[in-house]
Length: 399
Image 1: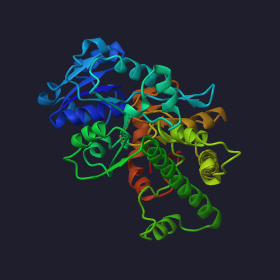
Image 2 (image 1 turned 60 degrees about the vertical axis):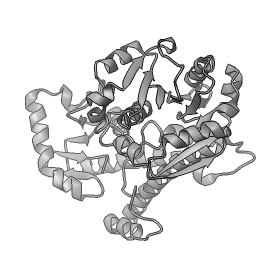
Image 3 (image 1 turned 180 degrees about the vertical axis):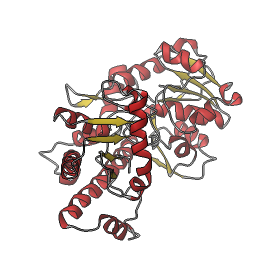
């Protein structure tokens, strides 16, 4: 098929490169000229494991093209357009910002090729798409929805080996085109209505942070009770109804999706008409645990007479360079404001505005690494994510 992908972020690039690997012709659109030129020069704008291997493969790259405007494409034979633009929270109105999505739908709706299947991969609340279509004068019943379930750090594997494929829509012809695109996948394809398809995405991104927050609260309860946290979590996770996946403590969860999507879920409904005490308190639980973790580190530092706190890994999770809503950076800011000596140890990511190993001279950096590496095994075996020597406490947020 001939595919157009609007947006070259994590979702757009992973999706488009994956489709090129499967033999489809893929055209990318991003209004950022600099980004498009780098892509033409075979430079990815972010790190994602294995993505470069597929992106740089000659046969795949020859099936891809990159554009910074809509007019430079030949739309006549385009089968499917995936809209993968960002839908950030508007902090002023506490609502989702749909301007990028509106712009994309508006541009595509002007095309003469009415057979194109316009598919939304961007995450947007069910009630918002009606407003978007009304604003741009497009029939919402012609849209299809194909929410993504790509985890940063394992997005390429997730693309090729999905747990499920969700397609939402009301137009049977356009749904069939999407179904055909995915016919080679060994995964259940769930066909549903537009609202349900979006709610599947949002509730998935609600349950996962709920589970992570449960583990963090269990951590606090185990500490309070004097229990062995490793045994407690193993014993609970061995229950087949619960399982041990996503069942390790952390300083808090972060990233670009969970915080944003939880805010939007809590904006779905009128809280005077519907009470969801579990969902509405997940964010509060996460913030509480971050401060509890900071206090634990301060207590360990004081009780052991240590000089500094070292936070290992700047990104919000392992195998990514994404700093959005990073617990490491949040903890650094809190500790730094308290006047504590704190440093971020990450040899791959430049963290502007933070005291990190990148800012240290060669001697100081070597000294810090020489402390860190003998403690790696201790860090790996300690479910509480920290190790101590006679100079500092080293905390590994990713577990």
